Image (cartoon, rainbow, N blue to C red):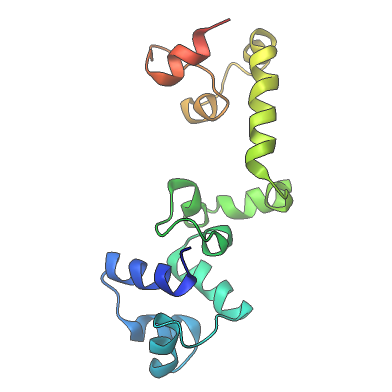
Length: 147
């Protein structure tokens, strides 16, 4: 189980930031920032909001107790996509991975109609939906090419 204070410490080290940077971002004293990093002080909801903003990593990453480092999807806040996800309702889903698996299955079953209807899908969108990227015969190309 990965705890929030371990994630904070790892991200501070990775980004070569100091605990005083964290203290400023969280609006706490340097001693409180040290206590947070050592797991001696609790993370409040305002702290979580400030962590999201400071590290530009989605709140879901901080609540996931299985991962120490954020993945690409977790960095959406930096590109403004977190707000778009929030507006779409995706962040309200109890199990977004389950929803995405179902969406991929539907797209695969209706592949021809879907790609005809949306010919301007970006390579990232095609990959996310499990569709082959033009000229790509890698993992996604092989799976996506099967009819």
